[in-house]
Length: 359
Image 1 (cartoon, rainbow, N blue to C red):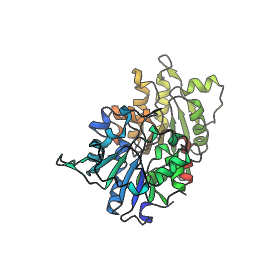
Image 2 (cartoon, rainbow, N blue to C red):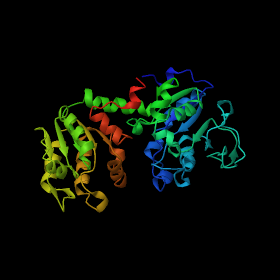
Image 3 (cartoon, rainbow, N blue to C red):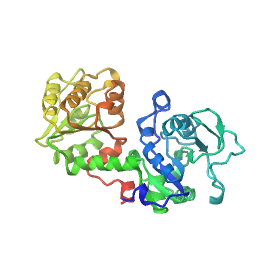
Image 4 (cartoon, rainbow, N blue to C red):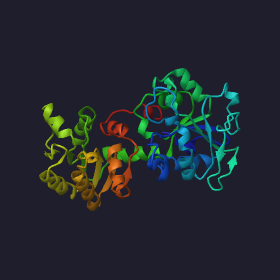
């Protein structure tokens, strides 16, 4: 895979596909999301190459343009993270020749950036933030004309959005077929970290899978059972596995549940802790109980056991990282994957469409 350093980017325009799908309350503004922070190495590298950066991405799943889901709201947190001014662009220019994003427009709220250090308005920036891509139906539909419009904005394309690499959307699979492309810094790290788990983990490798949605988690359990020394299964999955009379491999330990089936039983917690203590590598995706309803004992016990084991620990999935953030434990994990579904597909051995195009 080509990386940023492999492209001749000086004075060129670069579409940086970013993972912008973050909550627009609280953490996104006060502390900045991990997903936004993950962009900084690529932005710094592109900036040092004297490239003009156009950040594209989506928030949530809007069915039409919705000001409440505009990426404009990310300008302040991104400027604080990048320590650079950012210009907002809400629409395509009428032609590729008109795509000079750093200019002020007749709409005073567009094309205007604020210096994050002085607070003063400026009319130039090397970094532009484009509007929520899902405001256009062509993004999710992988419309070729929409992909062409995006490609016309730039000379090169860099993908740094691991969390969306399992989606065949225009900005993920359409654009890299039209522009010279490379992987971003964080995406490369994601690939390296997750590949090590599959191809060359330090044993004992313990995989922990929780949450619900048996249809997405079962392929992961089956694939990890071939690689890991043990797979520990909690959350709502034990109920679903039993419901579908799903048989598991001998090294898969399916938890018993307690408290109205909303948390691990104490017996299962003790069993899980004993296994985790032996680990050299741990990968965890999916909470072990319904922590959002106050049933957090199982997840907390598992988290503390992982940290105390001293193992190289990789964690991912929105609910799992949310739980760890709430308990101030996220920073104690070796690597936090920005992908939920993408991480699961990768660990299940599936091909991710956006990654295949970058190989």
